[in-house]
Image 1 (cartoon, rainbow, N blue to C red):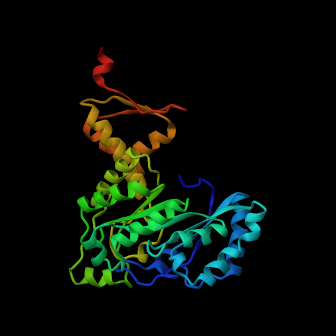
Image 2: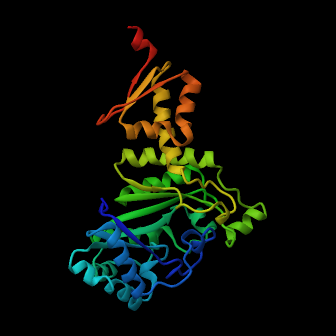
Image 3: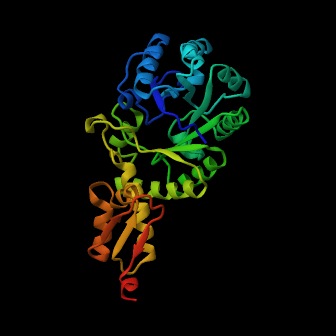
Length: 327
């Protein structure tokens, strides 16, 4: 499992990427335009340590770290050496494309304190990879992920839903492959940014993004699958951004909240004909009720008024039906 330490994020948009996928506009997502230097990395680490205290993990996001020139990789990582030597930083996480990652690459990264590698898998389907212009084959991805696992890294894998040529079955097959290797997972729905090839396809009618409902339904299935295989999903949905940052697509700043509520509501609906009360921890009650009360409204539309009882330290959801009350 990936380390649970606090994260100090450092974004390197597009850095090292040999291609530009049809959907990608990292500058819009991260709102960062300037290149990252060793001096900036040290400054960001210092600021992050002041916020998170000692033991945080520095994470390079947004680019393809291992596809930067080796000298650049070494300079960025060496800027963190002093922080790791005195324990202020516990380790380094990198995000990169899943190609050309070998055990030799892994050994070099380990010398610099890298302990976690995240790969943007997105899909394992050949047609989806081609239509998204990923510039990579399934064989290359599998070779790289296997090399990272063999090198002893915690491996995170990222999946996207709603890419060109993607469908529910292909998303499921991707999840099945990811579950063989991942220590943790991120799930991102595809949205359309203006300065991308996907935008041109959308404008010409050659691409239709998932609706918010479709994306939530599909993500709920993936969350259930990963939970059944005991793989933590550490991120669901895109980072927070303004409405004018994207054109169209299933973005919502409460995306995961909708998914987690629907998961629980469906299980409750499947086990009851009549429902009177739901008891659970305050955190779990909040997840059931959902953003804007979506889960509560759905349950009460079907069952009528329901009592929600927050019970501190309660592990499982307990429900009470009208039939139980009448016995």
